[in-house]
Amino acid sequence: MIQSVNPIPAFDIKQQYTTIEAEVSAAVLEVLASGRYIGGPLVEGFEQQFAAYNTVTQCVACNSGTDALYLALRVLEIGAGDEVITTPFTFIATSEVISAVGAKPVFVDIDATTFNLDVEQVAAAITPKTKAIIPVHLFGQPVDMTSLMAIAQSHNLSIIEDCAQSTGAMWANEKVGSIGHIGCFSFYPTKNLGGCGDGGAITTNDPAIATKLRILREHGSKVRYLHEEIGVNSRLDALQATILQIKLRYLDTWNDRRRDIANYYYQFLSQIPGIVPPQELPGGIGVWNQYTVRISGEGRNGSSAKYRDWVRNQLQEQGVSSMIYYPYPLHLQPVYQNLGYQIGDLPIAEQACHEVIALPMFPELTQHQQDQVIYALKDCLG
Image 1 (cartoon, helix red, strand yellow):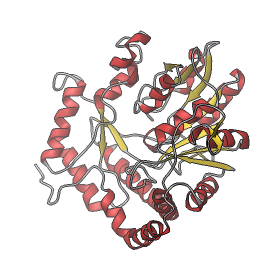
Image 2 (cartoon, one colour; image 1 turned 120 degrees about the horizontal axis):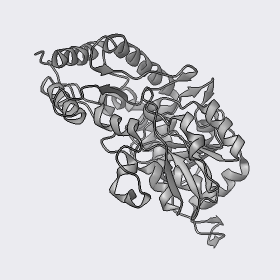
Image 3 (cartoon, one colour; image 1 turned 180 degrees about the horizontal axis):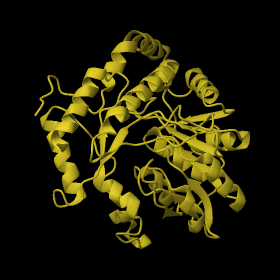
Image 4 (cartoon, one colour; image 1 turned 120 degrees about the vertical axis):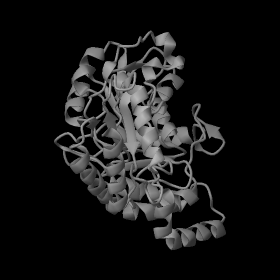
């Protein structure tokens, strides 16, 4: 057994901060001295820069990626009696917001290679009640948006892209978040473009949608103390905006580094029996927010999940940390028992939940550290 000299974390956001500490510290102190902490020119400036980066005309910053999805559904007037198609293999925020507006989430199984929504199964899930589809560009890998947009257009459906893990990813030379009707982003600290707290943004090319989103995020108010409808309080802090402006300048460099790391992983992990590394679809350029492999070991230690957990424990003993995204599919969560899904209804997603391990992935990960991860996997898989 090979023992790592230094433990390798699954992610390390502190290293990234040290490379831009001087810029961030100076900018934060300037904001603190200004006394302008909510809204204002810094937030507006970030919105303009983020819109330009994503090649859209409109960006509305908000409190979180979850709020971005919620506001997107609200602005499209999706609610009670409506259905929204999405994936069962993602964080619950994606389906939670569908339920929060009173609509019904309809889950479609995933593709075994990309972990993304299986676009070929979407059409069969559409009913007269379907109003929208929320594809999740999971782990930073883009969904086949060409096929999905064709389905949406033929059925007159809206597309809300969940880009929480995929800022900078592209499909067919277009940035995710610019292809559907609305794009929703998260700036949670561990994301490719992460702040120092919660934050989110919504992108669109429709000025009318952007105008209404700004009203909704400000308690349903365009003029102070005059409220046109029920909204929420979902604003991005100026401190987060100024930090994100700085990080946005480095994002492409960091994403390039993530791609290099992913390519190096694939070169060696694809040769190890029992490991199924992820692959990009032709036409997609991912940003690898996570690098998630499947550990295929049914029967080797009682069950796939038990074997996966055993492998993970072996890695930890050798100083290699990992994460599991996600151990339980959404359609089998206790909160969705009323939807009537049963074990076996969405078999690929269910199998993925039993087999996935997210290996260390962050731009500052060194090749030596990657070698340690690869050697540790070889060692415990024999």
